[in-house]
Length: 252
Image 1: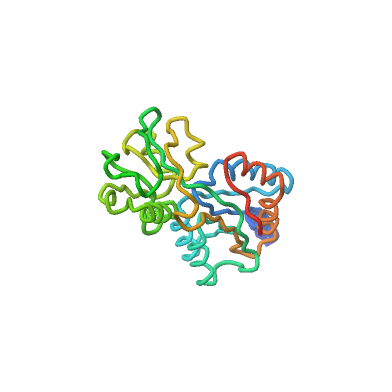
Image 2: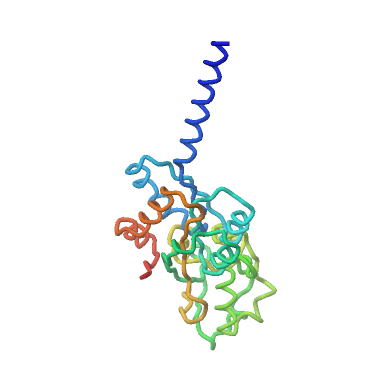
């Protein structure tokens, strides 16, 4: 029996170590537009706290649905308040930890060197100027698409172009389609456009043409490491990285 007890003891210790290691991870579900900035910001946190940060990027809508269904996220960062409100209503976030972290700008892009003159105002006939397709996020659910439809509607452009809008799963997918020339133009965040050498920004939408672009962040679990990571995101060092990528740091 003694060898068996030793084996069981070793197995128990091994399981405990695995559980401890897993518990030390911080899993962050974040909007696709945060991919570059958050990947860079996570590195000094990992070095300081000796805690791995597992980043999962997708459309805020898709991530919120995954969290609702029990996906193991510790922190959620959305590209709009709607999907954070959705999870709050389901009791899936720590409401007290919620903070409006960042802002962004909505822009019109075209493949490099293939843009056309655009005036972003109600007197410009955008439908006539547009000859082909416009890519953005799915306008019913993906934040960038929701903002895009609001802006196009505000300017009186939506009716003339809605039949040519291609909805994508997230903002990076829309950017990729414009990069490849599969869409004549796209509506994305300025932070994403600035990461690409294959597109030009040909217009910027006024802030008052759509709901303010706000990135709220909150804890999903009571993990202490998750709390530390949220604090890390609010430090000046992280703020400088966000600013370098073009994000606007919001006051709490």
